[in-house]
Image: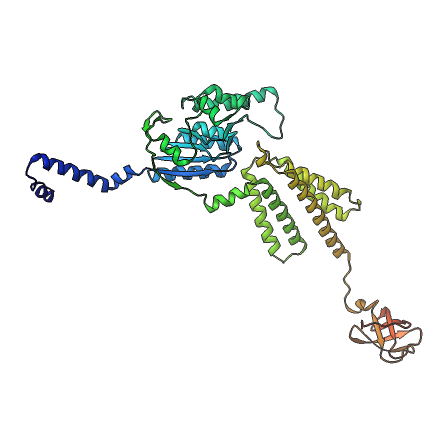
Length: 450
């Protein structure tokens, strides 16, 4: 402060000294961390380009926490989704409404959509935006695999529309048009959504969007007003963590079914060949992964019973002579079980027909083949000692008239023959009498098995 006074005292007039002081303070404010922060807005960016499910919840929560910790000016969520699970949608909407930083949901790039559950996220945002050539809506709730009676259907619709109205009205958007997306599965282009006041702006890219909304005064869900500072903002993307990436892949029901079936097959191999360890350990790991993934998805437990019944039928096929009937029924049960295993509202979260058929047929044939091999191996008697020589071919080392020595299986044995055998002739072992083999001469036989 003393140095500043000395520097100002060099100016001859108070006016010039005041001007110099103002310039100095302005320059100092720009160099300070707060001054730099004010001149360069920061926006945290998330990319939701998948179905809405529990992993999406974790990703959004992490993005909101990052934006709050870094004191970002806003959180930008670029969205492209066909929809997802209603429970996950409710959780994500709650997180958006309670976010300490403004949330901008942007349906992009061109060709993207905010279908079904995505429409709820779009309308819950502080700023709802879409890129040209996008659409949103078609949010009627769907219960796959169940036929609802009119009363239950009306209850589900009323509950869903009430949930939507609870935040659309607070955002000052068109409640009637939003309800049409639920009750009548109405879908809107970006221009239709803007005209119906379901949207705040249309922008071709992220930077254009942030520049367009800069300086706007918004009303947060808790009633506070806030001015957006987003022009030329520094974008900080938040990428999915390794855990989120792995779980996101496992959330694919087709992959989960394949892992489940392969895991069961490996454990079956371990039971039939105990001590190999690797198939059992790997199969257990795959089963745990499959069960973890299925635990995050809406699963029909009756379908699990069908799958277990299919395994039992295929095992019975190897033990009961049914001429393939049990195996065929088992394959059908496995296909139906895998096909109806996941009860999801959108096709992207269901098991594909091709996956169910391929899995059922392949697993049915492989399991039946392995079971037959195992049963055949158990039924085959293992011969040891002299009994193992029966049927073997030997060479007479001396004349058998009727007793002499032969070489069989690399060993010398005393043998007796009902007919004379000359040295070098081949004989076949017919029986064992103590330490003597009963053999018969093989006319003109040549064999290397001795």
